[in-house]
Length: 269
Image 1 (cartoon, rainbow, N blue to C red):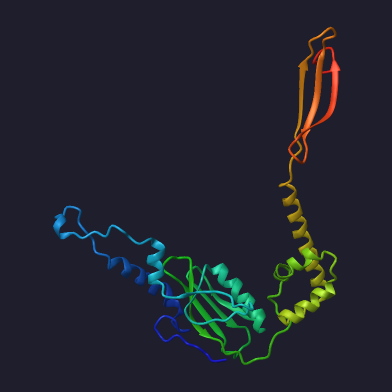
Image 2: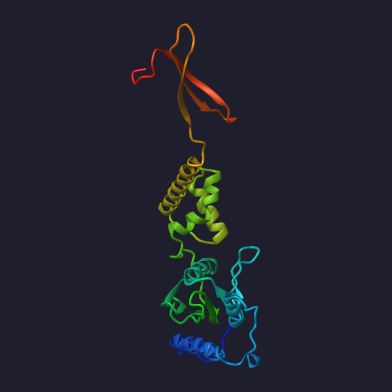
């Protein structure tokens, strides 16, 4: 793969520490360029734009990048200028990319304004660096060297139980009795990753527990049983009180459960 490097100051490996300062200066420069208008000036010399642009549109113009999107076949491809929604989103995407390409990387820098990833193998040139944009939330990929010269890692440490369960949750939901061996074969075929049998059992149990939580949440949306108790006084030669218990059926109709005729409406009755 061809290595791409961003050739401007502040984005090389030696100048990664300047991202915060450069970002702050750029942010101040944007605000310093805005002219200050005195409210006491004559109206003839003041031009006011009545249709001001929203903050998101202004930020989009200042951040000339490309939002990250997965390919149709779910393959992840990186290029300089990609924008991630947040640092958590960026870590999730890079974890999927590491498993996809069989790379084990270490996070060199992971503060609020910088994210730097490097291959864990000494001598490998794979490296990616991103810094926070002026909005303080999104991150832009500014340095990328995607040349990985070493062999593929099949037992990747990034394949945690939580990650595998998230990928096979729908499969377990549609087939709760699936065998862990089938999950292992699909994991090896789809992601080229091999894990031990104990981890696969933990993956299956975790997916089943999440499925049980979904059932519990769905139970809360069911129709709650409504039972009403009422009584009316009977007028005639015998008198008394008619007590009845009713509830709503599936067609929202009134259905009688029990009927009782007593002398008085008391607690004993």
